[in-house]
Length: 80
Image (cartoon, rainbow, N blue to C red; front, side, top):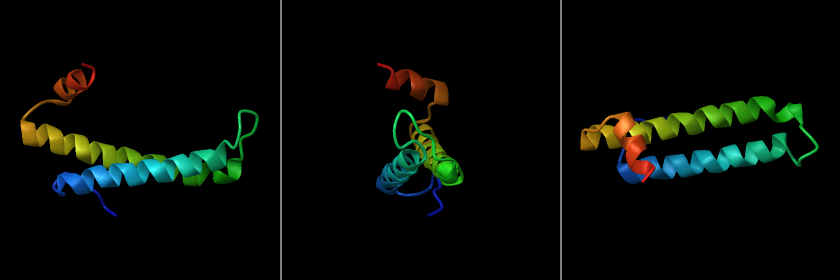
């Protein structure tokens, strides 16, 4: 799914959750335990991470655009 800031807000949140879940699965495959790294899963993990980052950026951009705040202001609000 291509995620854009113009999507429905609930769809944006769902996209972030789905992407985070996919990233978690690929991370677990890449690093099955504290003593192993399975490099055969590195490309899939990098792709899943990039998809998660794009979904998070679209949600962030939507929030900033909707409420007329900067990324810095949003970050400050999340730290409260």
